[in-house]
Length: 344
Ligand code: TXA
Ligand code: MG
Image (cartoon, rainbow, N blue to C red; front, top):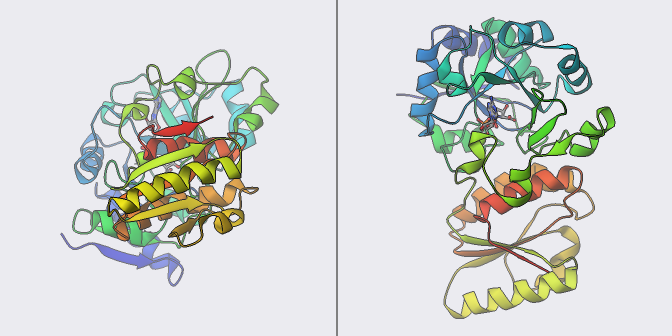
């Protein structure tokens, strides 16, 4: 299959029309959102949605997020009670997915048989225009091959999906860079299942009893089926170092890199702009400023892909404080490291 790429920044009308037509015909289209690129299919068609799992190589027990372009459309796919309405009003459109009780029009292929569905109203103008033009809700996971870092550019999508999907809509780089916050709104208080740019602190402003799911704290049973899968992993053996100080981190990282270099391995360090002086002579990939976690969110997935591109075999990353967006960055970084973390 030939994969067509439509540049929305040059001709939005043509790309959106082509994408919407494919979606209505039950085909797959990759499209930009403010978080990461999504791989969309008509959420009302089980047959169309099955193609997503095949193209990504994704396990079929991992449910998809349904993308809508209005709160009215959210009501067509899920039961939106008064409380859910409050959260949608606060965080939609935006990088926020609400887990709600699903309506019958959503097939089991989307929710992996669950009675709930994750609903998201993206703020990205291309995503919103595509959903509106298709006229149906769009089921979409991140548009990477299963296990790879989520794509934040059309080039990333093309690298993973060329020949596997009919079209990619190129809307430039994604702003946020990490996937949406997934928040379960079916219980008495909101439970954060996947941290993102809508932070725990922001949820607590609406309900001080909003909590982080225990699986995110200690690694017990995954509440969100996606939590149990291997994610984002670069080919390099990646270790996250979190001693609480730059000096402490640098000492451990440099010792580890020296050992890897002695063993003839190709190495790199993921660090912050302030840190580079501590890693003189090393291959450094800069995640942004340590004081600005949103910069690390924006750059992280592209840098994980770059590790592979450079053929790096052993890599270390410096940690961020797990507050605000830093929680989302650390969640993805630890997954990319398959849980290899050296802390104090
Ligand atoms: O930012 C995003 O959310 C991107 C863009 C494309 O919108 N999408 C995305 O989808 O990251 P995906 O499939 O890569 O991640 C969806 C996550 C998975 O961890 C999945 O297990 C969880 O949401 N999820 C989906 N439906 C759920 C449900 N009903 N209950 C609990 N978790 C659910
Ligand atoms: Mg994903």
